[in-house]
Length: 76
Image (tube, rainbow, N blue to C red; front, side, top):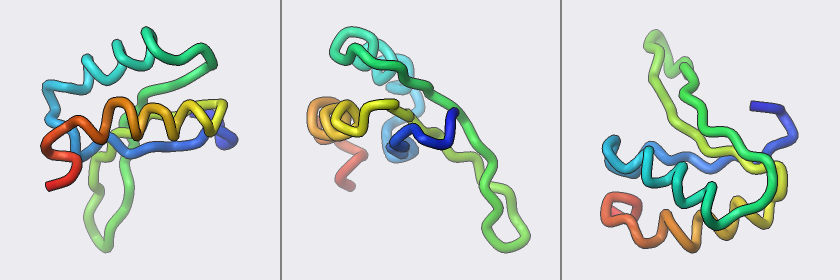
C-alpha cells in the first residue's frame, strides 16, 4: 500500500466479511484503494493486521461510516 493512502483497520470485521468489504469498496468508491495484510511487531510477537487503504481520505471516511459502522464486531 502506498504510504500516502489513508489506512482503515478492518481487523474488527469478521474474517468472513473481508470479501464483502472489498466488494463494498468496489461498488461505492471511485478512487484507488488497496486491501492488505501486514505484520506488525508488538513486543516479541508479530501480529497480522488487515487494512483497507484509500488514496482519497474522504473515501476512507465514507467506508468507515457506510460499511464498518454497520458491522456488529466493529463496535464490540
